Image (cartoon, rainbow, N blue to C red; front, side):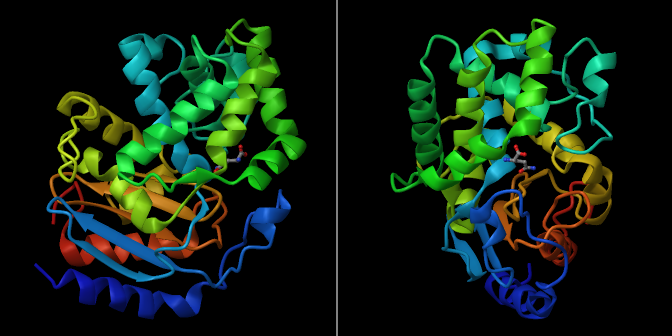
Amino acid sequence: MTDLQALVEEIHHTLKPRTGEGRVADYIPSLARVDQDKFGIAVIDLDGNVFKSGDCDEAFSIQSVSKVFMLTLALGKHGEATWNRVGREPSGSAFNSIVQLEHEGGKPRNPFINAGAIVISDLVLAGHTPREAIGEIVRFVQYLADDPSIAIDPEVAKSEAATGYRNLALANFMKSFGKLQHPVDHVLGVYFHQCALAMSCTQLARAGLFLAANGKNPLTGHTVVSSQRARRINALMLTCGHYDGSGDFAYHVGLPGKSGVGGGIMAVAPGKAAMAVWSPGLNHNGNSLVGSLALEMLAARTGWSVFGA
Ligand code: GLN
């Protein structure tokens, strides 16, 4: 096995000159003003050894990476019944697309596109006020990462709500099909706050570790989910975690992963490690451009691709 610390440093050094490529998300001011030169990598193995480089301990807006934690919570509450509300197929459309909802009776294709994540927020809300659900989400992520300092950035949450016309349209459209049980403003309140979770690469890698270790966090000894559920969440990340770029990510990287428009990607090498990268410049699918390249190099050099070394 390559010396992982040397490898992450080499990847950082090699790709740092390319952080100017791609475009930073600019739909809200707090994302638009992020320094595009930021670039962090963190890898954590099943023994808890951390290998990291660059801006790996600076918190950023995890945005849609939160959809993995939300799916885990929803499955914990509703089990397989979750799949009555949201599908498990790649969408082949942009992350915020509305088109297929009309053809498919208002049922979103998967839990990782916005429409599907909004349904998952509705499921996590069951039996709670929005404030309670948001508190539960923060505590869950703190528990996964074993780090009580993780919090929501209130400014991001506020601007998500102020500019979230597309998400409002998606939620209202699904509500018109009877696909949301709670009031639209409650559901979106939860959704906007989960998007505003602020975490570093190191925290994200730690939070994803249970998915690399058959559902059990090897650092805390907590069984988060069954091994079957961990495997299935990984399958969904592999097929749907990068929106319309999921096939490309599987082709180049070959790891289950989930991206967010803040430029973060969390990925999992089952049985080996969890990792996270952050570089805010996005490719045309809304996935971190340099972050994807970093994971491609990492998977190639470690032989971690789930499709073979
Ligand atoms: N807050 C963003 C949205 O809802 C999250 C999207 C993303 O990270 N791809 O549009």
